Amino acid sequence: MSLAEKLNSVVAKHDEIQAVLSTDSNLDGQEYARLSKELSDLTSIVQAVEKFQATEAEMADLESLIEDPDSDAEMKALAEEEYRELKQNLPEMEREMQILLLPKDAADEKNAILEVRAGTGGDEAALFAADLFRMYQRYAETHNWTFEVLDASETGIGGYKEAVASISGKGVFARLKFESGVHRVQRVPETESQGRVHTSAATVAVLPEAEEVDIDIDTKDLRVDTYRAQGAGGQHVNKTDSAVRITHLPTNIVVQCQDEKSQHKNRAKAMKILRSRLYETARFEADAERAADRKSQVGSGDRSERIRTYNFPQGRVTDHRINLTLYKLDRVMEGDIDEFVDALTSEDQAARLAEIT
Image (tube, rainbow, N blue to C red; front, side, top):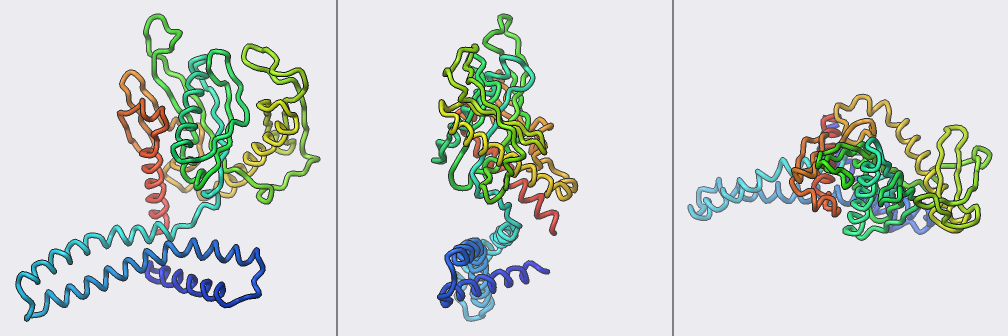
C-alpha cells in the first residue's frame, strides 16, 4: 500500500469514527472512551495530511501564476521564490506523515518504573548510581512529572547499591525508554588520594508501569517474606517486620521494598515493581523476533551494552548508540538530557521507517 493509500485510509477511518461519535447515542461509556481515544490518535495524522494538501494546493496556485503570460514580472518572481520554499518543505512533511503512521508502542503513554543499580567499581559505582538517580529525578521535575521513591538501598557514604522509583506523568515511558543500559563513568573518586581517574558503571532499567489489567498475577505464584528494614550501616529503620520481599515463583523474579514503615504500603509498592517487571518480560518476548532483525541497538532494551559514558575530566557525555557527544556534563547531571532523548527517538523512528520502506 502506497503512502497516499495509507493516508486516505486513515482519513476515512477518522471521518467514520467522528460520525459514529456524533450520531450513535447507544454507545456505552467504555466503547465511547475507546473510540474517542482512537479518534484522538488519528487526528494528528489527519491534521498533517490537511497541512500537506493545503501546501500542494498553494503550490498549484503559484504555478498557475508563474505560467500565466499576463502575470507581472515582479509578482512572478515573488511567486517563484515562494514556490521553491514550499517545495523544499514537502519532503519533511512527508516524513512527518510517515512517522505518524508508524505503529504506536502501546506502552509509550504509560508511567515508568526506574531502577538504578551500582555495577562494577565498588563505592564509586554506588556514588555514581546515586548521581544518576538524582539526574532522573531532576529530569522528572523539569517535565512536571511525579517522582516517587519506591525503594533505596544506601551504602552509608551517599551511594546507592540499588534505587527504584515510580515516575508518573504524560508520555513518561516514551521519553525514558531508551535510558535502559549500562552507564559508564570516568572520574577521580573522592576516596582517590593519587588523583587517578577510575572507571566504574551503573545499570539503568526503565520499565513501563503495568496496571492490574495488563498483568494478572496469581497469588499462588508468590512467596512473600517479611523482615526488619535496614538502613545505611546496618541500623534498624524500625523495630517491626515492615520490609517485604516478594518472589514470583514461575519466573524467579524477586522484588523487595523497605521504604515505608507500613508493611502494607511496602507490599503494595513491591507488587507495583513486580507487575512492571513481568509486563516488560512479556513485551520483550513478544518483540524478540522483530528485535532480532533490527540492526540498531536503539530501543532494544539490551542492558548488556554500554550505552553512555560520562567523562568528568573532559566534561563530556557520549552516547555510543548514536555517536553523540555533548560537552555539558554538569548540565546533563542536573537533568538536562532532552538532547539525547530527542536524538535517540529520531534514530529509532528512522530505523523503523527503514524497515517498512
